[in-house]
Image (cartoon, rainbow, N blue to C red; front, side):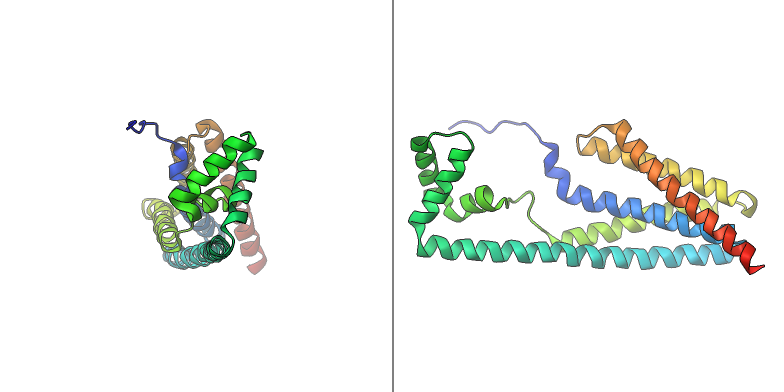
Length: 232
């Protein structure tokens, strides 16, 4: 029996990586933006900290809820598609064999070989073959709602704690530049790490996340300063 090769593909990280990176990135950007906006309005240090903590809690719960609902909807769709495929395999296996043969023919196999491959795969695991090659559902890419929700909430919390720690370590006179710079450094590191883990270009990942995050935080500072001026 041939031994499985040891090649590792970055695609295996896609499911959990997407939720974790999205959560941490949102945690840093949204919390830092909130803190900077409140600080620019000349709020007290305690008010800034309370706003940041409230943003952390609300954001983590929102991320978990949104991610769960989104991924659960995907899981429901996958389940319904698999149930339909299971019924079709039971009611008309010949048509399903013909369908699978056609799929392999479109991928470059001649009719005879495609028929042999389809027959063997259906004999081994008919539903699995159709799920993978007809529906595009695999174990690696299938929806896992609870895993995605937990990863989003946890990573958002970890990300949001970073600008909060910068607030605690900064005197009010330099709070805005310190939080801004610290958050951008955290985000650049996160973008580079995510790109590396996913096998993408690290420099591109860093530039992308840094640019859009800086824009978001800059707008928040501007809005906070404008509201402070209007309120005076």
